[in-house]
Length: 54
Image 1 (cartoon, rainbow, N blue to C red):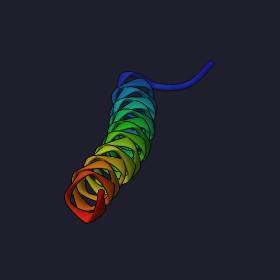
Image 2: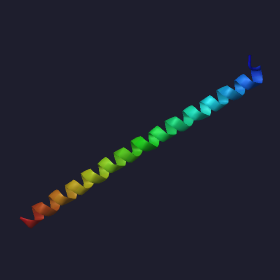
Image 3: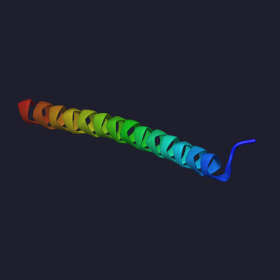
Image 4: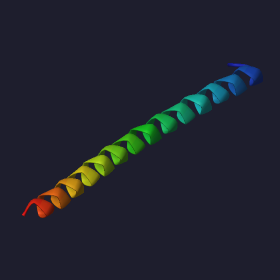
C-alpha cells in the first residue's frame, strides 16, 4: 500500500498529465480553427477577385 506522500505525488502527476492533454487538445482545436479561417478568407478573396474580373 503506497504511503500518503506517494499518493499525493501520484495525484499531482496525474493532474499534470491531464493538464498537458487538455492543452494539447486546445492547441489542436485552435490550429484546426485557424486553418478553416485561413481557407475561408482565401476563398472570399478569390470570390472578390473573380467578381472584379467580370
